[in-house]
Image: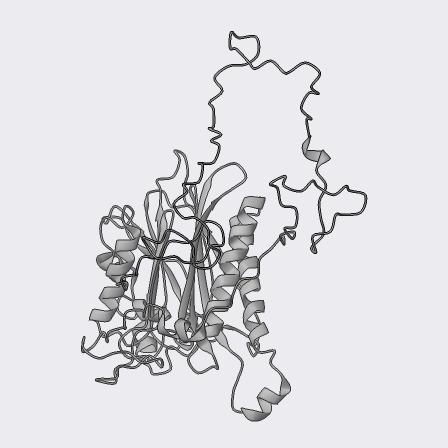
Length: 433
């Protein structure tokens, strides 16, 4: 910053301090003789003390009869109040002591000035990078999830989900025809009381004709998965644990229908949420499956020369026709009523009848747990064995992705969800049950 030059001040009279002109011999105000040079003040230099009494340093000896200097402790000095008056019970301090005691006490906390809102407005938070449309790769995505350029709806969180937990993995995809993903899954791994590892997978398919099928499948898979991971470490037999998990899932779906009566009045056409469920538990030498509905479990051995197998029976119109001997399997599943289910989870289900079964495979392989979004494109056990990658036991997540891709390549007419659980080689002496 630039500064203005300042003029030198005039000398002053040492007697009356009035300004005098250079060269004046006498002060014009008081007549003081300016030619007399004043004596310099007596100098009292500060001395450095480098020793103490008794260490060879010559200390000044006090004059005879003189009193020793007074020694004051910090507590001997009294304070003053805010007006400068001595505090009660304290003696006034001698004048000229050089110490001031009229300083007010400092507060414990100092108030901070509020920030200027005008300054705060200028400091804007850094903006998050704008989401770019996955379709045109040019437009920005608005808060509703649609591209401002081409109007394409952006993928939602459940449109494609992948998860891996220990040896088990699952993938779910919305497919190519549905506007949302109504499937859900839960995977996890734990240990039995004896330390034996256990892997679990639950897959649920929302019933599209019901209200809130996506909420039903999510609630059912979450409840069943949590029930299994809680029961198995307590020593509950895997088949009993899976049965109880399906019951817990049904209760979770039933709870979704418990809505206020006013909601029914505003939407009388709505029905109870519903979904199907299928699950599998893999432990050492034991495979347990359970289901309600038409989602399936397949067994595919690592040795593809051995036969694969479908381990579940559909709760569907087509299955009933085949079981009753009224139609062949090919005829039944070619009918438009084939996928009408006869069992599901929901408050309006006729009766909850969980199906469970246990198996003891005599060799290593993989267990495929899936919705009809996959098995529509690989219906028989032989067809499923052909599309499961040969290294599925070593790469379960990759294999689940391959199976989902197979369904999408086939048309992706439905939501597709697949879980892959490796089944290790059983102990010696184990046989089929």
